Length: 175
Image 1 (cartoon, rainbow, N blue to C red):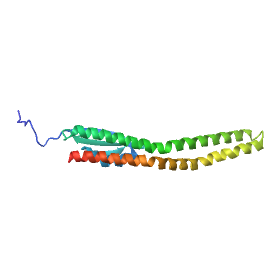
Image 2 (cartoon, rainbow, N blue to C red):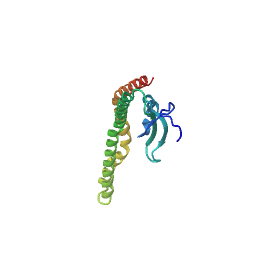
Image 3 (spheres, rainbow, N blue to C red):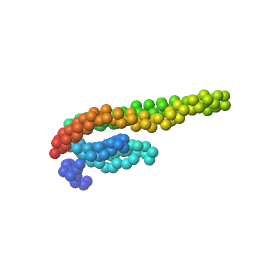
């Protein structure tokens, strides 16, 4: 039987993690996960069509202050999900309004086409709001998105400050 040492001082046991995230947040994850003791193994697209990324990480299982680092990591992830939610909220109302206007424009144009053989004047009258309903959504979308971005910007900046404070606390625990 070979001589086996019970303790190997060079041995490091790792825990592994794989996270699936939005492309827009990849840089934040890659920059800040090392503050929680994680090493980045790889970052790759989930699927060619998908806007998600898969990041593979590893960390020493016996890292100092592991419980506190895990708590701070969960706090970091919750803050990032709030940032992502607010970023999506910028465009949700704008998209819904623009789509509604576009749909109503389509309804007017469809009615205009159906009435063309029976009443040409009414057909033209219905065609005008239909065309406006197809042209207007772009400006409505950009206007609402810009206003919503200005409204949410202070909240998002405050969340980023909290995020970086959390990462700074975790980094202090590692060093």
